[in-house]
Length: 292
Image 1: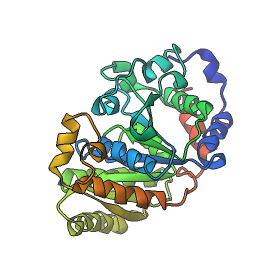
Image 2: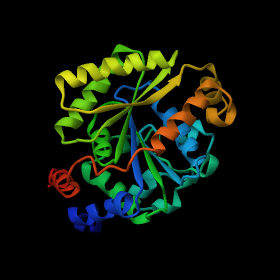
Image 3: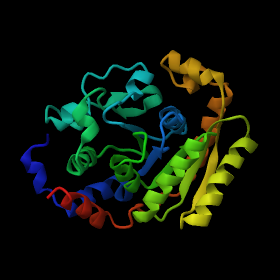
Image 4: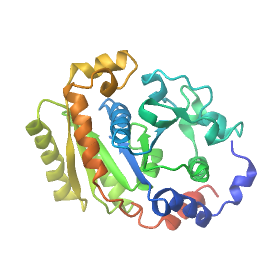
């Protein structure tokens, strides 16, 4: 998909571009993931982005579910071009960025395009490099990862400064979150994993879920978890989705909206940690060497 000229980009060159995203410009790269689908990850990504924008932060949101994107659909925004067009060298990243609610900028992926669901590590690196070259002025670059624990999810979470894992009160959700933490820990992620519990009945309910995950992680893994809050179960979330709006905009006084405000304040107080992979150069070199 990428022209051959992109193959001449060295791991060191791409590492420098990534440092422009997170270190030099002090952009907080936040990956939102959850293991299994259906935990409300994308809804959290959208509303957290808006709540951070309301704190006067400049926010860009990347839809990294490349084959089945839906952020633009959930917000009722029409994307004329998307990352598929960028990968085909038909346009640049700057040509596909959408203006979302509250000034949030959105990079849309494609929906129903088979090759987008099976990108190589080199093509993932090309997307990252294109975004880095775009070099937007931001406080937060939020990555809404694909569901599951595949290589693309692993790649984007390793390149984030902070990793937010969404869990809900389902055995599969906790099991998949644990599996994701295990995979990332084995790949060298040393920072704390931020855990948010979604669709819970109360603060105590959310804390119990976190305690379950923390207990098993502490026992079997060398991983550090931090609880960053909960989003309550709220009928207004589904109503907002049907209206193709964020719940913050559609129902600002709802329990879930207030939960997103709390979550944004917590995230905004987190320090910008060093890159999760420990060494960006070595990580990129390993990914690119797999393509040779």
